[in-house]
Picture (cartoon, rainbow, N blue to C red):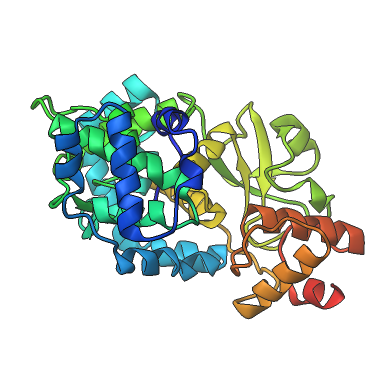
Length: 389
């Protein structure tokens, strides 16, 4: 589920300076505004009319956008839900089946096979289910909705550009509810910027050609900043006692510094790179060092729980052992998490939306309050923290 704005989308956004203010109101009036803006951008009136001729608001898209409860799950539960022995086995089989393609991707874009295999698995179950939402309807519906118009409005115009190229059908192109298309789920602006005709048949076919989809995904990751030959995530062991406030993506140290603090790799050696210590379920759960490439994952998806799971699965596909589950402290679920977020907000912390999801802003706020209250500052919210607040 790709939610970052690509370079192409930012360029499109710059050409529509007031786009983020244009949302809401009647749907028909909103579409009329899109058509006016499209012709002002240089698209022919005839093309624009054909493109928007049958566009309709999609309630199912809005329902899907508001029903992302799976991201409220803690890391262990979320990762075990997404990573099955079957997915591991299929992933390894796909790696062999498409070995030539993955070798090309590694050479041209520097992206390791496991990284794209994990996205391929999570996004569409290796192409098995790519979504049945009408893409144009979803994009226009989400652009009209005022939650994230700055993301989705530019994608409407990117889809229009693909339509003019003959690579998009307003009535037939389908995909995920958020407008992503193909086996690794790419938004229209990303397709324009990163689409690759990997199989050499003259067209970029992200829905039917695994080679095109994987090559395009590799190019996109490279453009997002992926560094060739560098790791992204490594499981480590942590000492029983340390300054837990050093954990989290806001703190970066050399691996030699982490080693001096007692951090050890569970397998292999630590890379000679800057890294952050992340504890998805606190100091008593799994622990990882996140290297610079890990942050590129957030350009693909902004959910901490999804990113950490995808990055971990990629290491498993490349031979890493299953993580040490540890014995995490009881966390907060559902309404408890929302209560915590409200209390944090009342204390002046920016936690974003009160949604029950332990995202980056909530983690930062939790860690700050743990430090203030003299609790282990590992960013894992517990009933003890909730009660003390």
